[in-house]
Image (cartoon, rainbow, N blue to C red):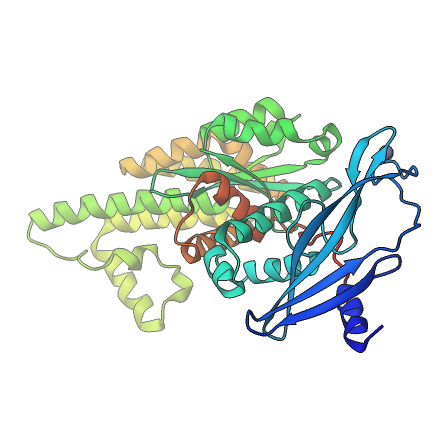
Length: 413
Ligand SMILES: [Zn+2]
């Protein structure tokens, strides 16, 4: 065997009975062709049942492999098809590629590594493969990863929506909050979107779920109550979402106050929108003084702001009973505040209080989901959108699913 044959044997990770037959370099085309051969007189076994089987015929096959320097490298082999008495005609499994693949496992690994960093189009262009080929490698990687993921038993899950294309076009994303991984992606944000996740879980995993963080969103609540045992003790309304509702109400009060003051010729609230929404801890000393002065001048706004800050302070308490007591007092205050937007939020919080109180037992939030959401939107921007929801779903699982994506056949150096 020549030195070059030895080199390619090592590069392909070939083991007996496979061996390099010959290597040809086509300088003009910039290609290296590697022929792999099997010895005759070997006893072959069926890939399904390992029973000995005679050769039925051969098929000429080629695989794109990692480039040799900058030369495209192609592996060729005449692969036998075996005739198993039980399974019929089956192609022999080659050690360097997955069944049916047009690329060696090492080449697929390279594509997968690149896809983690760049869009499908960029990877296809760079590695000189077609868009469909690069996308196909991603599809198979996700399918493989999902098939391997059986033993995941999440304790805490989060449910959220993320935008797909237009503003009102969403998918539902279910994640494992402890591992920060996406478990499930479904079309839309309806009850059925989430039902598919619950009904797809094996019973033991369903029993293992201790709490679910979500927004106060009727379809998700309905679905969870219907499918998760003892759900009313496990649903936790996300405190960041509650803060968001309070901020929205605060902003509504500001707008109506601004109109009222404007009509009377005062411009006190002009340009103060973000001062009201900012976290007070982020103010400098001068800003703190100025903001206190502003609050003295617009009492209704000050009251709305204090309501919001007081409500959020409840979440810093240790015990559920203390939270319930403070919320009771806060609710009475809010309902008498004569601030319609605040009263509306107060009624919503009262209706959902039991599930808000579950926070003090489980202490989970959708914060890690927010981080995943940011990543999902980054992937979306990099790809300049997706052709279909299915491709979007696949990309989310590829980038955020924590899946084992590499081909099993990959010989790891
Ligand atoms: Zn068989």
